[in-house]
Image 1 (cartoon, rainbow, N blue to C red):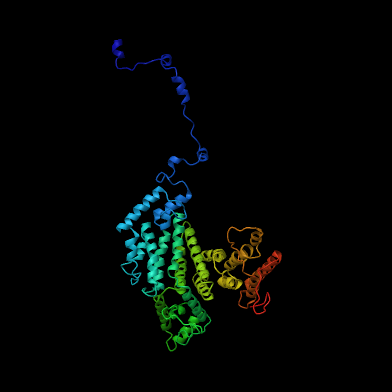
Image 2 (cartoon, one colour; image 1 turned 135 degrees about the vertical axis):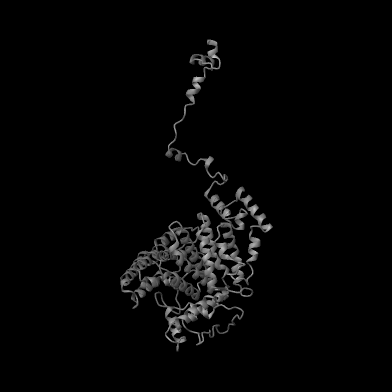
Length: 525
């Protein structure tokens, strides 16, 4: 019975017997005791764990490589960057493999930019034609398809705006285009991709730019129009070319109908009253005005400064229209897009040697489309970035800004400083533009004094070294003394003038003014 009861049961050994058989067993059990779990703070102090950091792309070790990977995946890298010579450094093996695959696709004509871009280069196509369908491509769900459409848009706009083969671009075409580009930017993810896309959209204006001679002519025409000289009763330009110069008959720079669209409200009302003489007051004049606006919006334009200003105008119009649909999570990338667009506009002015006609053309667009309208968030952002972006453009300009051209560039903001309906907007201009220029970017600022004390400067300064601060102070005094200045703002403008004068005396210097025909420093010229 004992034998039967022990069959099938495991043999039991005592602790002493196990110790005799394996004397190191007890020691090993005591040495392999479980370690206490680390707290969250202790794990954070140890740093990132390589085993669970970027498992899908283990070769990414830096933020620059990560940003480059984001843009490669989004299809926004340039050819130089894909070859390893981009601004983010050497391309990783993972990205090289992806770029090679994309290159093979392009050669085969599948999912590449070759076949897609070639289909958009026909300048006879319209933006609303079924063959192009930019709205569907720019508002699609695949980000690579959207970004391929943006890249193909460069060549299309360049061909469309060409004087010889292009059919021209109208304001309505640009409004439709910006509707799609807005959603392209709206759906862009990751900060490097958003910044790159905003930069590409801002640089699209150079596809619409004309030559320096064309823009010089356009500036002269706009100045003549702005001063209401050189226009006959039919609205045609008279004697636009200067004496001794031959006009370029092959280049049509300014369209009279487009110029009529840029007129201020008073002049438009006067023209409408003249054109609508004899009409009944039953709404016929209003209908005629609406028809004229539609006709102007569909008018085709070729390359030049006027088309660039129209591109900026439609962009600001789109931003102002869609501003209420932007949430707090996406507002930063649209702030960046506005900053880059205004920065490129100032660079365009600098490339055209600060032509007065082009400056006034862009200022009118900026004031009519953004600064004179709500929302205040957009206006505040434009006021904040104005002086900084203007300083960056002046830093790389061939001809630096003087006090005259500087005051021309900031003319719309002086209108807000003297006549703004909202006092918060006026205070923003005083603090973020006039006072900031004096304290950070003027020749008498502490920043300029510290830079002058340095023996060697590695890079060019952002200080306006050719802008006479005393002239700016005098202009502020004149604005405060004008009869149409709002009484609420006179005291603040006079105080700002006194602040300028005190700063100049404290610095003990100012930009030296050259004599013109015997004029001395401080004289009007």
